[in-house]
Image (cartoon, rainbow, N blue to C red; front, side, top):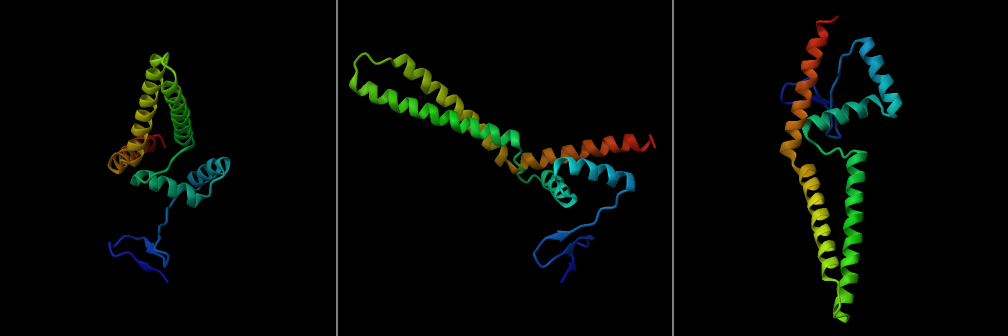
Length: 150
């Protein structure tokens, strides 16, 4: 069973809690949109959901961000291992290379800071929503200039 949303919008609320919306597109718009989606292997629904989620500031982690997180995590793991090894050597050897240890420790701090900054960006809902609103405004401004072309 479905019902109209309380806010008076045209969205239909399904039993699952999802709101179902309808979008009107010109035939040429739909064809171009669908063609782009086929190339990406997306359905119309999934593409629209991704767009809505990005505009709303929900997390959509792309391949590049995922790769960055994996690389940073790998670097941190490698550095942590090197620091553990150096610490073991330092406990047994009076001629321990403290400069090498400090370089690894500094690199660890840099990688950890990069991870922290990336995670803060991902988890900052307010900034994501502002970015989504800005992108939507830019798209709307671009559309209004193209409307005059037709």
